[in-house]
Length: 377
Image (cartoon, rainbow, N blue to C red; front, side, top):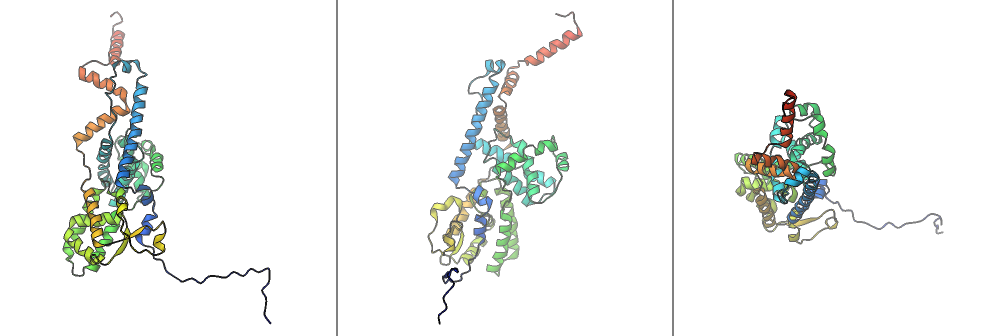
């Protein structure tokens, strides 16, 4: 006798599935990070963004001039076109100039490389959202470093911090903290190339068993120096940390790293999966992909030794372009920035250039003289 199922019980057939294990790579994890999603660009997109931010700053300069023209004294002496907004290159240069002050400040507080690198990253990211013609770098600099110390779990009280920063108070340092975190979209986790470089340092010893350890150590130390310098370039916005770390090692000893890459990637035959650089998405190499790689979240590609070497060379080129403005150039830009933010101060400059006394000072001097001698006309 056949047993019939209860009509109220729904019988669902479960399709047979083949159990497959999907391996999550480091590239997959990095692509889920806020650093990749918010702060990775193509070169042309990064340049376009800086132009847009500069346009906003130019509008603010125009508004500052319009407000200053409400003063009759300024209106009489103002020459149209005498105050010009900064260019995108000038903005980038002055941001880099002040960013280079962060390592020395961090060293004073005995902060490690990770904290200083995070402070520089926060500072540079902030000016991809705001113009220096709105927030002067001097107002943002120390707050970014203090915020970095908190995000990297290096505790220091705001009172202790402000006491060692000249002309600052706890209130002045915390004044723009919310503006900075808002500009960062509250994404405070930073991925730097230091850990990736150490990983390569270990991996090289695995693939090259007879490596000269003295040579490898020198390459590693020199590579860390390149990382400290590239923090002032656009590399962090264009490439992933492993690509940057490998490029720094390449710059330190390209012969050793070429040998490692040939063994690690198997020359032109063996292929491995890696994250494509953001500025090179058009050149992706087509390869056979499994189902996991087809998802939007796992955009990986197959690369050969030649592809990897090309990526490294592209990254190395940008590393060498790290800006290092001179004090003379920085002062000229800073002076121009000062008048963009405070157009009325140009009157004082004109008086100094022509030797004309300040009317306010003349009036104050006359009142003081009359107070001393009431009979003087």
